[in-house]
Image (cartoon, rainbow, N blue to C red; front, side, top):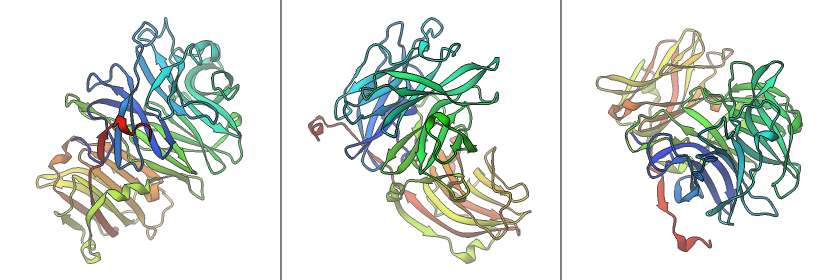
Length: 454
């Protein structure tokens, strides 16, 4: 079941991506890691780096919990390289007894190559630095730079108008050392259906602010009005990042105008010695009408190998069964036209029948991904095609629909039995074209200390 072109550690448990940063030609990925088992437990920060997302180098563990009464886990956070200071990690330090020892936001200072880290004392922020009444489990600092100053957002639950509300809190660095921070105000408050807004990411795409949070379910995004400074975030567009909660806990690489989003893929069965992987990195944009657009990064195309194209006359059939598609590790790309009462499906199947299906329903403008409904554009005309790119990596399926306006990720245990791709339509739908490529595994190597100076 273990994916081969999605990043993962050598073994054991992985969850949230942390500290995503680009330095000296390397994309550095830190991530939540339990090095002692394949279930959530003693959370450390694992570390790897890559130049192109296809060849990875495993680096030494960056952070380990102190193990005293104050720190049993090193929760999520970020990495920063200030212009006039050493690299910094900001993370949430967590005790097993959070009521006696509330979460604190701590920092660690790194060497120039980001390989060795030393924790700072005292904590960067304690609960006393949050609004009065903030719940003790506030966490997940994310630092960003704007107009020459550094800001931080932190997930919290605070009292507001007589009730507890999930919030994203905003802080401002007092100087370039990043040692002292002052509270500004709640950046964003959520309605009652969001009980906690984990792993907040705040960044700009062009002149627009984008806030992404993980609210114990499908991720939400909010896009702010043009020119709003971060302390006056005023979203005028909200939506869903990925319709499955199996895509979770995002972080970002901000490189030369690109915003690359990565997430933890969860939902794998236990007891296999490993659990969790990284999503395919997604480059973010905003459409002309204001939607968030997600596209697999261009580097992923280098993993394509042998492929094929399904002839137009074959696609005109209401059922097409393709036994030569390498469905255990494949990218499928195509278009689909569907009328107001049409139906269509893309199925990964075996001789016994379908094992995984993406089913399009024109009557409800909905895509169903094995029990998860994805709402499509209800104003779409029957002549306007729906584009799709679907990646299948053993047990992981990531689907990008309608140019990346809609995304859904699923973990499916039974896909190893799939040996064919099946396309189905009724008379109210039809596929425009379909290409596929077998995907080769990404490569890994262990850290070579002789290259450290490089």
